[in-house]
Image 1 (cartoon, rainbow over the protein chains, first blue to last red):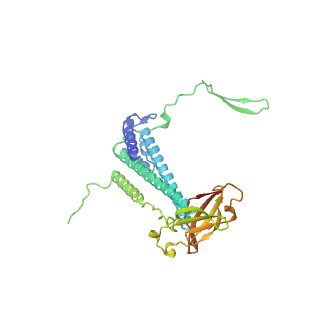
Image 2 (image 1 turned 90 degrees about the vertical axis):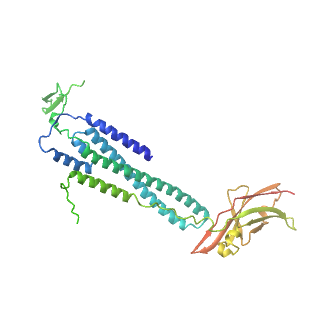
Image 3 (image 1 turned 30 degrees about the vertical axis):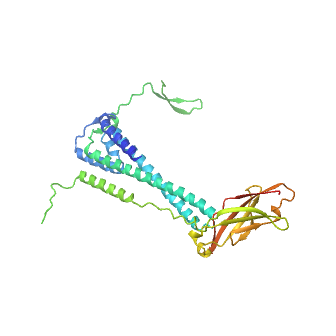
Length: 190
Length: 161
């Protein structure tokens, strides 16, 4: 499991490095002022939301990959931790029942349940630790990548994004038979 | 005396690497909680198990059938002192025909029991199928009398002589 995760992480990083040059979203204009202040802002973004800094600097694919992989790993770690706590509480309850059992049969049933709950507890802990380490690794790689490997592609200007113009859109005001004026928009569908 | 001089003040890069280091350290410390151990098994051997459970059919002077049951416990492991071994007595249970419903036939302080009740008499039938079980019981400790592991059901078939 650990090996698979590391392999996946390595593949993802390799993909990110190759995808860096392919990022493009609309038109970007070079930054005229102090570029290092933009990078500082990007680092602050990435510290709190991994990938946000990369997206801000124009490397959107890489940024999205970092964000998704971090959120996925962190969420899995969180769910596993929640399950770990729940299994611990279940084990507490079973231990109480076991120590107060008055006959062998019920004690044996409870003990089997305890063994099962303990196994699940261990696997939840293992999963939590694994995904926590993965989330931390992604976070650290995200910061290192932003500092060392991400170039500023310039500021994205929303008004310069290429959007196909809508043709034949008609807006008009009509008066219906009850003398109420209505505003109508007609858009021709392909 | 050594004087450490920084060639330039700490920049954003240094801060980032410091944060990465702190985060990794924090995660390492967080992940270091020890594994929770399972409480030790205390129900096995709390009361000695029933061993070598056997039975035979005999008859009395008045031609009544008697089922004589015998069993043992591991006195090498638990000792012969019943109080030390936590073995107060045994309960004997019987089921007629199948193992669906066992009824108590009484308790015994010795590892043997004789059943000559009316239910084990053929009374016109050719044969009678009986199942017996023995359950050991411990002494009352801390207001709890622990009931031990029941023996496997012993099949006894009484046939007409």
